[in-house]
Structures are given as C-alpha cells and as structure tokens.
Image (cartoon, helix red, strand yellow):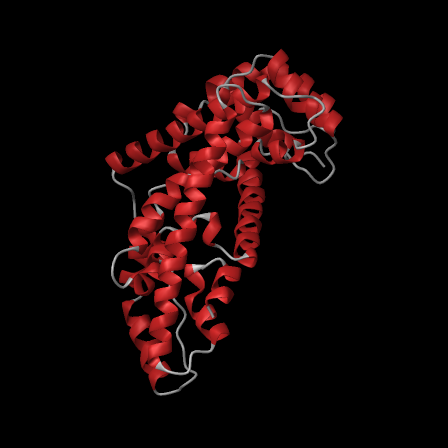
Length: 321
C-alpha cells in the first residue's frame, strides 16, 4: 500500500481518489491511509524543497537563459510549498485542504498535482490568456490593422510613445492590469478570488440549502447558483482598488525584471525558446526560433522599449493571424 502512495507522489488533493485506489476495507485502514498520506507528503515536500535549494545554489552568480528560467519557477514553487506544508501539518488537514484549494487555487505546489490536474491548470491559463488578449486588443484604438510582424514593428515604433502615455500601467485600473497578468500567464495575487467566493456564498445560501435538501432526499431537483454581481452592483472601495492596482503593478514590474534579464543573456542557439515565448505572451503555434529572435529579443532590445511598450507589443503580436 505504501509503495502505491509513493508512485502517486502523495497528491493530497486527490485523497478520495487515493483511498479508492488503495481500497481500504475498514475505518482503521482509512486512518492508516491518511497517516501514510500525511507522512509521505511531508517527506516528499521537504525533499523537493531541499532539491530546489541545491539547484539554485549550483547555478552560482552566472546564469544561462534556461537556468534563469528554472530559478524563476523554482522560487515561485518554494513560495507555495512552505505555507502549504505548514497548513498540511495541522490536525485535520485532509478535511480543510479542499477549502484551501478552492480559495487559493493557484497556491497548490505543482509537485502535489496529478498530471491531469497540471494539464488542466495549463489549459485554463491558455484559455484565460486568449480571452484577456482579445479584450485588451479591442480596448486600444492606436493601431487597428496589421497583417504581419514587420508591419506591426514599423507601426509600433512610430506610435510606441502613445502607448507609453495612454496605456502606461500606472494609468490602468486593476481590472485591466488583471487581464495583462492573464495575458502573460503569470501566477499572481489579485485579491479578488476570496471576496468573490464569499459574495457567491452569501447570495446563494438559499440555493445551497435547497440543493442540499433535495440531495439528502435523493431528488434530482436543483437550483442554479446566481452571480452576485448580476444581483446587485458591487463596487470596490477606493482603498481596495488602490491596493489591488499597486499590488498588480508591483508583480508586473518584478516579472519584467526577470524577462529583461533573460533577454540580455539569451543564447540564439537556445532551443527552449518556446518556453520563453509563452512567458512573453507570444503565440507558439507557428513561431520559429528565428522569428522569436527577431520579433521579440532583437526588436525589444534594439528599439529600447519600456515595460509598458513591451506589454502592448506582446498584446498586439498575439493578435497576428
């Protein structure tokens, strides 16, 4: 039984799935399953953290573009692992981990996800990116038509100053910044998920009660849950909007520190360019190494673009057919 858990890497969010696979016959067996799950997950998480720490140390002060890519993502995983493990060692963790996962869906470390969960997370990011890119593109009116990268670059150089003044990140509201983060498939803190869950629960208490009652009596009757934002106009107080805006701007600035550093050390023979293209919001369906080099690395460096200009160049580039 223990070996089976090790093969599954003690994925805590799949507790019920693991219990089903192990087929415990008694309540005592279920307790054993939970204990083994707890011990195994703790060991796996600590070992993973230590491995990541050694990986970072081994790079020293000099990085290649790919090593910087690894370090950036390792750091993000470590930020998730430590609070997650602290939560997991508390009594009764299996019971409230689903609540934690619901309130903070992106806070679960990648090591604790099944392959299908990880793929689902990546698929959701891609869907959100496409929607966000389209909305942001429709909101700008400086450049309306372009057919290819060369035309886009020519027009962009002529009007990049307008983007800097009209679409500077400091002048955008938090909803627009939120879409920009989705465009780059960033892992970010938006300060909205928890309030949205609370609003949804409050305005649907009667529906929850109704559905639970019919579930108990084995009835198929159900009521659809309502969107609280359609029931009443819920506005954000000024200080919430201000805090959210500053937090998103800070995260974008930190993200582009990494992007800019990686651009400077980019090796034009690096075959990991598609990973870098995804991080820059560029489409990877038809992109080649040569076009990636010229359309992002060389162009953004030679034209000396600011963060704001790189953001909007990426958004426009994503709309090329």
